[in-house]
Length: 219
Image 1: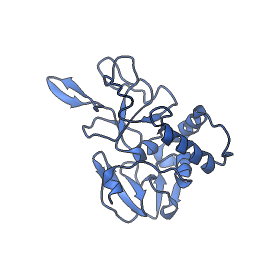
Image 2: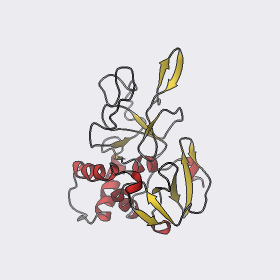
Image 3: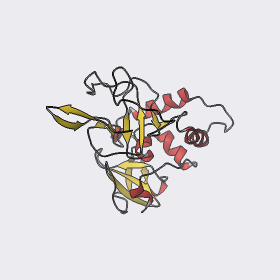
Image 4: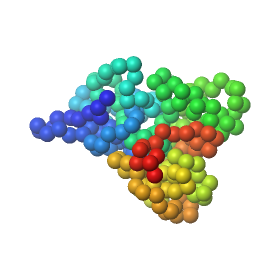
């Protein structure tokens, strides 16, 4: 499924539907590994309005599923959002879709229960996770928890200043961009602000393995 472009004065412009680790929507032509949505955020001209969500169900979906075809930002339909990879989507506050990414969803639920001190055999409903994630992701980034870098699980995202972000992977840090990750570097600081929602960090720590971009998995 394409990221989508809009026509402006005869020029093709990228739509504002790429998501960075801070959850912000940006117009960028780079492609991503995953799609997702937060409800309908665009108007008839495929322009993003002031709203950044219309539902608490922020999901991350496969780019293709059962051969379905969609017009990007069709009128009165949900806004297709795109992510570099799952580490980015999780950092932005999304979770795996229970339909097109069902196995990921089941693994996420199991790890989320373990990490958040729920009985592992309890039937956990998606709206419960949505409510917890929503409280965490609407908190201003720089007001979120800090942590010793060595305590972070793989695929957790951090920042120092609320703009640049890094992901932890195999004990190193890699700076994020829409095109992929930079090479491995030491931790930018001993203590970093954690961008990824706290309950998701606990799920990562308890066994959920995020799908990451080739620029990271090859490092």
